[in-house]
Amino acid sequence: MSETIALASDHAGYALKALLVDELRGGGHDVLDLGPTDEASVDYPDYGAKLAAAIADGRAARGIAICGSGIGISIAVNRNPAARCALVTSGLMARLARLHNDANCIAIGSRITGIEVARDCVTEFLATEFEGGRHAGRVAKLGPAKD
Image 1 (cartoon, one colour):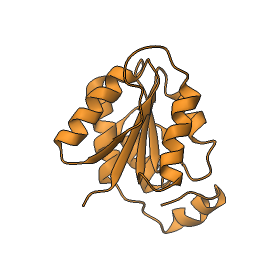
Image 2: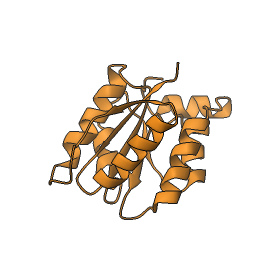
Image 3: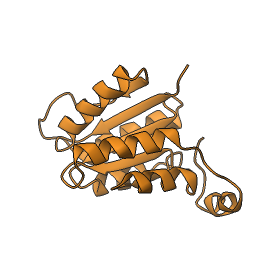
Image 4: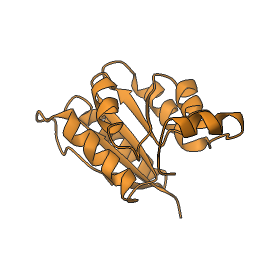
């Protein structure tokens, strides 16, 4: 059984979120779509909090947050100590977020990152495990996050 992946966005990230939800489900992943359900204006802090709560309470092992720039929603997700959300703009950043920082969430800016790069970010994020070793002590200094 695969780990559940939670996705949440604001209105600016809705279209990219919907595309990724469909593709992840089509690829056999368990997906928790936390909304929104359309492009009507919503507040990114609310959806960032929903994503972080899903990580904190164990409904999802990893999360993907999307807003226009990725910045606001990443800040919202990181308000919860169980979440470690990295804003990524390339597959390499997503890979390093997992490998070196043990990120359990990534944020993508739908107005910044194209669809193919976003797909690459998600692929690398899901395929990469935390390296540990010399990074473990540094990550521990960041505070609690649920694995």
